[in-house]
Length: 205
Image (cartoon, rainbow, N blue to C red; front, top):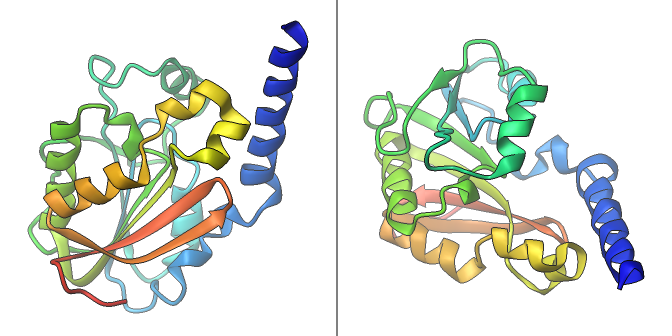
């Protein structure tokens, strides 16, 4: 039994090293030419932010707004609290709630959620949050949601820990309920997916 636990832990560590350290995960290649012409980019996290500085370098001509929706009463994952203690927030980060983003309607060209939205465990809260994301999205704007999925690949490497992730079906239902459509879906690694979203049901990439 101890050997199985050790083996599972080792597999998880190796997979995490591959996803976060050895792959091109943090190059954000899924953005493509999306930085060109963007006036405002928004990065939303759940208290652990590894991408705002990358986005600042990518969106050199745009205003970058960084928001943190973490609420310890609602988002109770222990690893979030640990990460918040270990890593300081990006300068200028604003604390928000999932129900209300302090942004005007149709004011955001690019909105990023990287390994953050799954921390919203309640389905209705998650839908309300994505409705807010839809509300602030400018015409032609895009939302990029990057997440592990509750699928076979993540079960192999994270074992029962894969239950912390949401299924692809669950994400698609959330997006649809919030008025967002998937214009592209890609695997940044076998274990991580990025959904590119637009407002409405008939948007194209």
